[in-house]
Image (cartoon, rainbow, N blue to C red; front, side, top):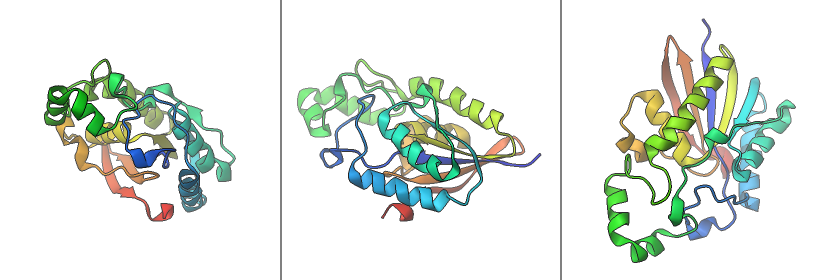
Length: 203
């Protein structure tokens, strides 16, 4: 059976990115830079025969997917299960603000990043429990085709861990910069990572 190719995309740079806030489910739009980054990615993928494009329902991912989809005449298929991890009461805060307000909780989260939940939010296993079945459905629906999945840093890292059989505490070994492109191939019942976190198109 022919391989299935998944172009895994992180959304572009968002408004206020320089503050490095924990966004989670906050619906923050792309900045002008983010729009330009995705235009570059759209040009890169314009000759790739994409059968479909899937996106998280958060506006930063939906808009990124619209830009990538435009050269192909496709409409992104909005998939709420691909959302970023819910970061609970830490959403909208910087790391310094969190450390000042809840130093012990922040220290424990950093030490157990693959399992410790955000306060009043999700853990990585919670994220994977909703995102991985959605990802599997995409792969299963497009056997032998090429598809793009546009999501978030945490979501993409969790998917990559599961696809490659790595423990979730290895989450941060996967770079996921704004507008990053990674390529997975599904062949002979296993995933192969061909490249990770490419961003030359976004500069």
